[in-house]
Image 1: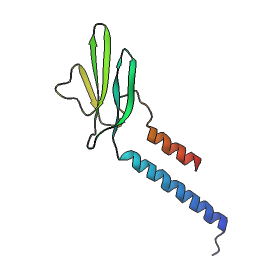
Image 2: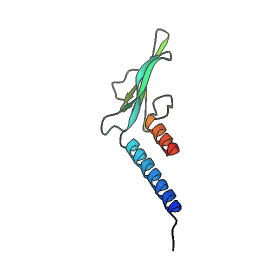
Image 3: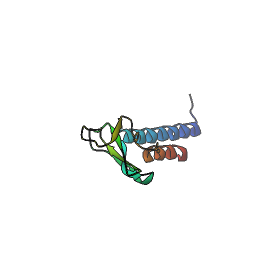
Image 4: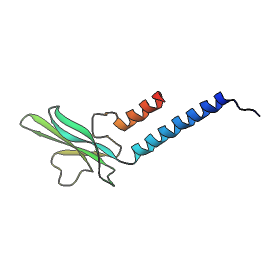
Length: 114
């Protein structure tokens, strides 16, 4: 059977695109990320942070005082020493406002460009 050069080129381009996407997605899955930072009555900063090895939980702790609500966001689960109402969760970036992972956005853009 004769295979045209054009169909071989399309096949190779598709394979390269698929391999690049898989590489990006595997890289995204190697580190666990949480939102880290703090807010007071909604004002403040939090950022996506790559947690240390072995961390598989995120937490957020809420404290109300003097009519203000302060929330801290961190890697790791709640401890018995947490002040205020602490909630932990076990999916990436689950302790924040549902922001999209930069790595996932990069992988999507890479797929669309290639």
